Picture 1 (cartoon, rainbow, N blue to C red):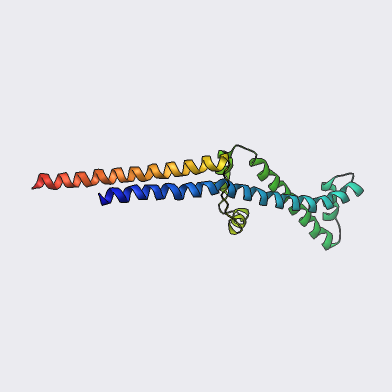
Picture 2 (cartoon, rainbow, N blue to C red; picture 1 turned 180 degrees about the horizontal axis):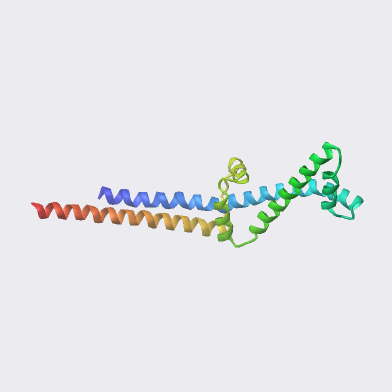
Length: 175
C-alpha cells in the first residue's frame, strides 16, 4: 500500500518536473538564437567598416584590402590584416551557425545539444532567464520530456517488481 502510494506520487512528481524542464528547452534555444544574432550583428557591423574601405579603395574586394595590409612594410598593417581575417572567419562562422538554426525544432535541439561546451552555449546558460512560455514548441517538448521520463520510471518500477517477485518466489521454493 505505502509502496504503491510512493510510486504514484513519484511518477507525478517526475512528470511535473520534467514537464517544467521540457518547457524551458525551447525558451533556452530561443535565448541562444537571440545571443547568436547579437554576436552576428556585432561582427557584421565591425566587418562593414572594413568593407567600406574596400569599397572605397579596392573596388569592393575585402581580400584585396587584406593583401595590401599583409604586403605592407608596416607591422601595424600586417597585424591588422590578421585581425580582419579573424573577423571575417568569425562572421562566416556565425553566419553558418545561424543557417543551421533555420531547420525544424528537432534539428535545432539536436544542434544545441552538440554545442554544450561552446562559449556561446555557456554564455547563454550563465545569463539564462527562465520563463513559462506556453507555445506549441514548449508544450510539445515539455510533454515529450515528461512522458518519456515517466515511462522510463514506470519501466524501472516494473522491473523492480519483477525482481522482487522472483526473489520472493525463489525464497518460497527453497523453504
